[in-house]
Length: 264
Image (cartoon, rainbow, N blue to C red):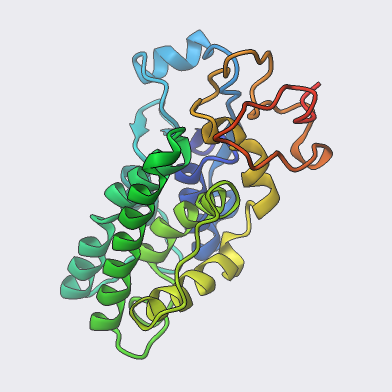
């Protein structure tokens, strides 16, 4: 093996984090990406490497050692490879960066729980929880860089951690009609989010791709699981997502069939 291997799902936000990091460092070819089809049982050889776990991405070093968890892999890539530093180098600024990143876990969990919710009566509760997260982010950004765009002076580690998640939350825009209100308390985070989504290093996925592939999440089935009455996962590689129609938005009323989703 001449360079590290990353086993990943191309549309996975945790994998996209690493892709963005490599783009920012100018090192896209420093690792080899190998695609894993999550709609099929894991390859026994890969399971042996990961000691039975199925979460992705996974990095295999040149000498066969394994690293898991996207934040761990990102730190390894940042420290192992030369190129433009992405994490802050000043100890205090790096601590501020990490403070913001600690909010990502609850932020992501709320968004995924919201899209997978099938109880219409609970949708308002999830909406308020998401707005609380965006309000916190807006206040944090404004406090540490008042009048600025990014957390510091450029798109950095905090931005690349959150950007793939905000891209996945396009499924909230589509299936839940969720928008960040155009109000003063959200002004800072709205500008930040727009800039993150448009950043050149983060264009590995697009809106239609997320909406189509994540349809099964919207009706409560994640990670390649098959919804009731369906034979093909929305995460299948074939037919490819550009060849499928946009899914129906009425997630609370029914589950679309394979043919309607363009999966057969």
